[in-house]
Image 1 (tube, helix red, strand yellow):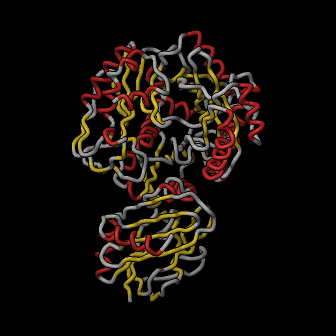
Image 2 (image 1 turned 60 degrees about the vertical axis):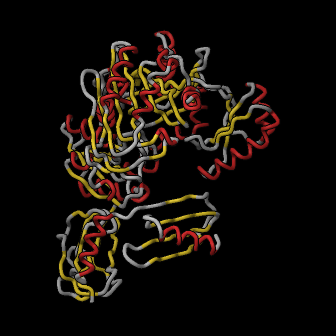
Image 3 (image 1 turned 135 degrees about the horizontal axis):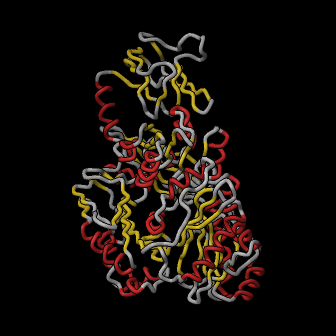
Length: 446
Length: 154
């Protein structure tokens, strides 16, 4: 087992990782930028090292600073959290070369799954259903049009090295293809220095259902069920839940088996997530694999009674997971609380928190790094807290969510708490019958 | 980027609380920085490759600035570590230290080594003056911006 872990991250996830390390008796090292001097993860770690100025690229993304910090503190492992360097293959490699265990997959694994077109190919070869489309990279428009006729319009042109909605163009009719193809390529080149694109059938308003995977060094791979993350704004998740209202036992088994098959086919180690798109007819298709712990991991922890960070650390240190999955119990929902103003197009709202009250009581969990009189720095993402509720049924979880949000007081800045309360009143959300198109409709209905 | 645009940007910067502004467009980068009290600096550099338009606004760290102002007032200047690593007074274990308290140094003289990832980084003085204090012991770890030396500016 590791003696000391350096957490190469900040905010709520850094605190989350420190908590599990403490429970495992592992010493912790926090790294921080000058803007995070007063951050909670710095206070609660055993040691802390200032690694640079405020900007991410000069601090949390600066590999030499982080490795150096691990070396001077004698850390034997680094947990990258999510975002920043969590899925950076070079960083995984540098850790390896420096004799420090990277709590995450190997550089080869990250590269393989980071190449979206290759990942899809791999899954397809192993019998995992994928969104119909091209067999890898498409070289020209003529080939693209041929494929589009095979799978049926609408199709989407996607960057192979891509993510975050960049390098993508939906094509509704053949006449739009030339333009869409070329602009997608250009955008891909600009954003990822790689103009390779592939074609997929465009599924209109599918549900986003992802499976939590865990693999160990002995070749065991299993899943901890699914999360429904269809409530998204501009491809950013806002509300997640487990189990998915759209899945029954039969579908869960089918999708779960496919997810495990996919992860096993690449000898996956550690925590990962396989994302599927689920269409209206209960057909599911592999979309991509994320090789890190995800923001929304707490809803899985809640219904499966498992500490996923603990399992990650066990897997990375060569041990077997000590909490294998059972049947999910009850229903959990996570509300991402962002420092954003929902009345003004969700514009960021950094500043000082003048008054704070976290909700509590039965079935309520808050993962957050904020405290009263804390000033939220403007340099990083706007996530300030995650509110996770549990209920025996989805109905009771919804009621608990509403009650907890009403108790959640944050003054001095704007947050998305009022927004979540509005969503909780929406009949579509309440019914459980919604898809990735829901939030756009919800926002334009107002 | 044309001169009129730069003039406009300077005016905007003058009348706002923003202290740093960097804009990159079509291979050209303009960086404007407003110093805390009086001076304004404008630098104009050409970036090597074409890149998409990006805007960066950074805010200065007020605490570090306050402390620096106090020191500057007394003619004292802190030399801080630009990187994370291990502090060494000499180029090798058996060699003489680069500097001792009382030594006079000029801007650019090497004061110490900070070792990071097996690379020995020579840290140079950014001012000329006399070493008044050495804050860190040989072989101890240092973090970003940790004060290493106190120099009385001559």
